[in-house]
Image 1: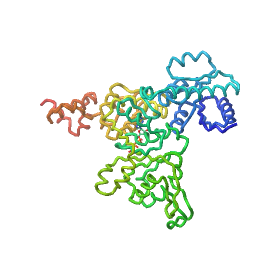
Image 2 (image 1 turned 30 degrees about the vertical axis):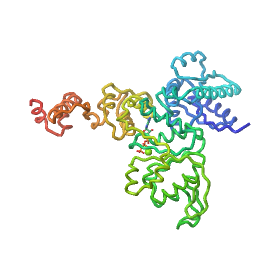
Image 3 (image 1 turned 90 degrees about the horizontal axis):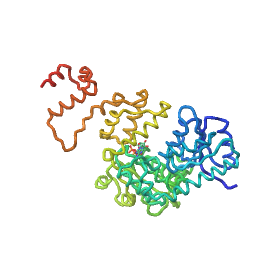
Image 4 (image 1 turned 135 degrees about the vertical axis):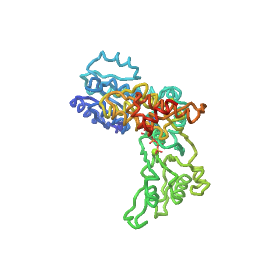
Length: 442
Ligand SMILES: Nc1ncnc2c1ncn2[C@@H]1O[C@H](COP(=O)(O)OP(=O)(O)OP(=O)(O)O)[C@@H](O)[C@H]1O
Ligand SMILES: [Mg+2]
């Protein structure tokens, strides 16, 4: 029996079935993950790289249909095997347009299970090899990356081109735009996905430690270095190292990095010996490296080595058409996490989210929805959104108005949002009720 390393997630509310499946799978050397509910399954999917989903359909709270829908949307390449006691269910499954699904009817023998698993993996192969990039792009997500704007499609196209080779990649973008998400997608969608992905926040490690953390050190290299130690680069060998906030790397680290890029070798701190290394480097920053080069705090030669392939990820305000999809994703994610059910949003609240400029980008949107899900009952309404969003005025770009006109519109907007409650409106506006009345009569 050859060693299989695929990760299989089994979802069933019946512990006995879970254990039976696990025993069989383990006897074939698969890694297994168990979940007794859709909620648990979603958490595992989020944190782990799963290769096959085996799920029951009838489960309390959220059922297997919803899980299949979710997986088809968010993990379109993940093969699915449904284990069901109801053979007639096949029709309803195809009705939800969930893509390719394999079935196994209870009760089943070990042999039948083995065959169904084999078939599921094969379905995936035919599905992915026959899918040209164009078809993938028609979808609204790519791995965990959600979006159908031209800007996101361009990014996905670059990912498709680089994921199976080891070209050095540079990701540029404002905070919260998804730089790390993209780095992970490049690694996990590509053919080196079984090798390690190591993320290093160059800004989060004290400057004097970064060098030895990255490249390792030899015994006696500095006080406290009691034995030889590998660095992140050695740990990532064969896979990907993600150097986040690269602008924070000291000049010493920068020259060692240059050597890694030029010679494909690392030298531990305190050593002369070079070790061959085969790592894809992805660097990211939200600071202006060109400016740092001018100020001579970042090496120009390193900059050109790092930017072999550049991915410039646009801020959310430049791809607002992605907002509704992102809202849907986060509603599902946090609905399942906090409320055990799907949370909805009123059209009014949704419009406010789509109008806002999102200086903190997707991370800010995610936080706002997370908070609103916690605050609401079943439906997110305008009142569950932070004030800064509710009262954000957004005039069309080409409309320039006087201060007086702007004040009038803003007061009207606050009044509308507070259902004409003048006391509340006055509080928000930071003026008293009398002043509101006065301004309105003007
Ligand atoms: N296109 C997207 N689809 C779905 N989720 C996204 C997308 N872009 C970003 N996110 C989510 O937004 C959050 C922020 O993303 P990420 O950490 O990758 O941003 P970042 O650019 O690295 O930010 P920072 O510069 O602050 O480190 C994460 O939870 C990520 O999953
Ligand atoms: Mg980041």
